[in-house]
Length: 446
Image 1 (cartoon, rainbow, N blue to C red):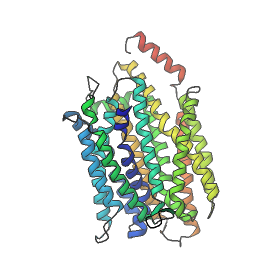
Image 2: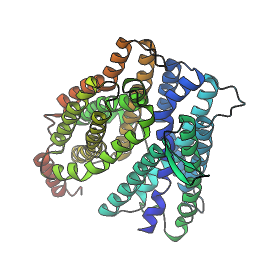
Image 3: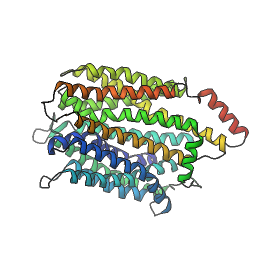
Image 4: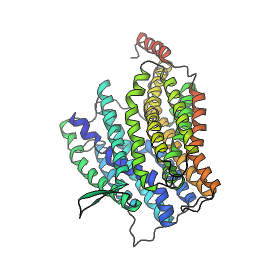
């Protein structure tokens, strides 16, 4: 258990900083430094697409080099160090430095390079720590739980300060103070996590897999051409990813300018992610009794119903939005768990069809689609916000604010409904998957 915890610790500070950059930073730079929302949005799109396409390259590099700390861990130290430093420069810009779009893009690119260097080997290491089916689940759960905890801590640090003179906590700090606290706490915890993360390689071998499948781009196109169900799942996952990207990108704007409650941004984000934690056992319970694709569709429909109410909220409607944050958070945990589980079922079908298990190709496609969806939706949200004439001040016209509400709640609903349409009659349900597994056993492929 200690080994799993030592592996999982870095995910907390890295997730905390990643959340701060891509959820909190857009509004901060727009209001504090008068940067165009379109420029910020376009920067997010291009840089995050670079992140998506560079993952396979980093995976290849971490496969080829070995050190006394293992193949993966030095990359996590190097990339995490670069990422935490670049994140500091983004979240706590030097007041003596001219902060413009060039400054923002430069440090965003450096942070993304650090993120890619660290996270591709980090996730690969998680898959290699054990061959045991249940222990792999414990490793993944531990890593994602600490990542979610990092986001929750960042939400708290964004809104709550500490008065050294009185020794008391106080509520409603400025965004710049909140971002400073997130940066400092994340840097210190990353250093702390490395104390346990790096030495644990000496006590146990990192790589338990004897054979590592080479990554081949040609096989990606073969999968796309031959695996119809996987393509359908990818399209549905992409649309749902687009839907899930709009609310985080616009959350600060919605709370600050629609509800008029900017001081509550951190606590409301906290409630959303608490809802996600609460929802995990509920969706897992349902997926044991109902086909996973139907449970996922049900979760998306449920999210659409809950999110419809954001369209009617107005200034000061704190109670209503608290309920929406908690209830919509429940659906997030289904989006995190169920699509990847369905992907694993489709992979079994590919093994039956071809006799090969192209898990590297499936993973590369899945990561590319996931990151591309978030990149496009996050950037597009800010660009559209700029095009409709939104200004980071209290003087926006009613039609602009109504458009912001529709972007925050209406666009995700439309995208999720299309995703539901694609997945509702997905052919690979529980009974069909049992037939696939039986056939694999008969043919000696598992």
